[in-house]
Image (tube, rainbow, N blue to C red):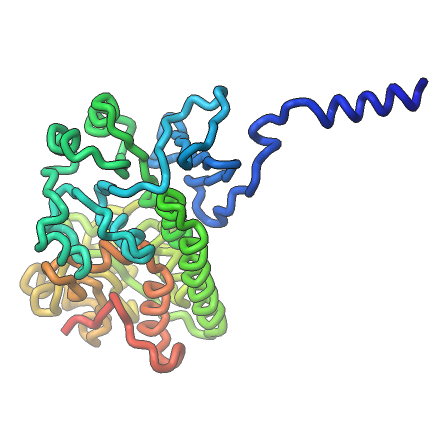
Length: 371
């Protein structure tokens, strides 16, 4: 009788209906992005976006559903049918993911088309295949309803996002993208996997990101070999205050990864510092390098804006580097569009600047010496 009861218990366990967590076909493959998870089930995926902006009050979950698939009634999240055939994105940082996956021709609308730098996408714009949607904070809802994109990829900077809420109330499918709020560069780049899931190109997205990750880590290993870490200054004057990255920011982390000694690495926070000119001069007058001096495109332009910049050793020796001179077809700064998607290139740029003996044959892609 005891053996029979044990057998019946095992049979009952084996026959009971499994919960969605128990029938998970593939675990979340996100490795670096803290604000994104993608869980694949039979016929659908659940995408969860966490902390899409600082101090976000809630998480956002979405179901990406294949044709003919069934979704448990217990899941009440918004549903997007995949693979999508048309998309609207709202940040230039979303453009490279579409291009790397080869689906840029599905982009049908964007706010402020002039901001886009990609040559491929600008060709589509010139051909009239991508429509202007106005300002990001006040997109043309009537036009979007007429266009009926399969999904709109939006973003927010705080908990008040009336534009996105209006779009959702109009029956449009909106997914919030939080790539910009990631604190690691690889975390930012990994959001290509969201687009891979939308187009059912997960394997391609994984391959692309893995290559970026490998190249980043290979370059990082080279930088760890250095025995001398040159000192680095960053930022410039803005409204009578010198704005520069805090010590826990991704910009400061990149300098450290590249083998540099960022002079404000000891400060707490991941945003920006606002210092007086005098405070910066005291600490950084003899800095070896000046990385990212605002929007300036030449040393002369810097000097005309503020003659005091010439007091810094890095300015005097010409060791001032910026991404501002690397522009796309329409004159837009390419770094703002592609930089967060290619942290491997950004890191290699900085390594080559700070340690020219490393990475033989490599030419910086974004960062160029100001003349």
